Image 1: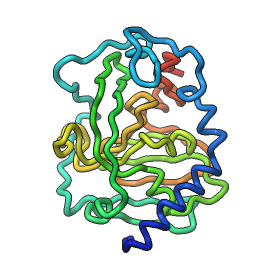
Image 2: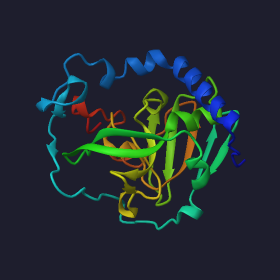
Image 3: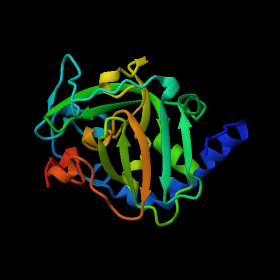
Image 4: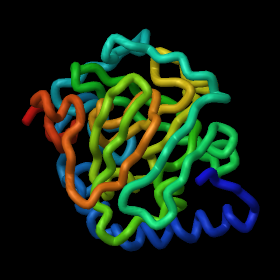
Length: 234
């Protein structure tokens, strides 16, 4: 069903997100990016007292490199849709306007690509993925997400990573609409994991009761993808 958003609905979203976060709080706090006492890396300390970049990474000082499957789908905002279903009690379909009616956030984070470059201090605008998952009313058995894109790309992520506050459905970066070549009009970002875990041109999120490997995970990339552990390949 399509979502109808009102002021009372927004209050319920925040309340539902808080309940969902509380349910998974212990798992979130024990993920590597949250629990490592001395994360590996190099460069001066960045945010959270961590080294500037994870091991094996260098800083992209100019352009933001473009990596994809060879397709760059052109999706007008008016035609973009996101389906959320699977192990949930209230499956939904969002259009772009409905996404904009949800609680909006601006967050600064770093972007780590498995091909050894990092782009620091990117300012993203979007909606917390946790809010959208709260709307869908994830069942107790829901443990993983399987994300699909308009170009056929897929990737997976455990619920404890998906609920982190810096995981966004982003539509703008550094004050500008997200460019098509970087996943516009809407992409998912996962700053505490390698960037391939955040689908460009996101189209569908399926909530699963067990893990399911995505495109790169099937091809030998790490299923967990923690940059600060140099966790690139399986």
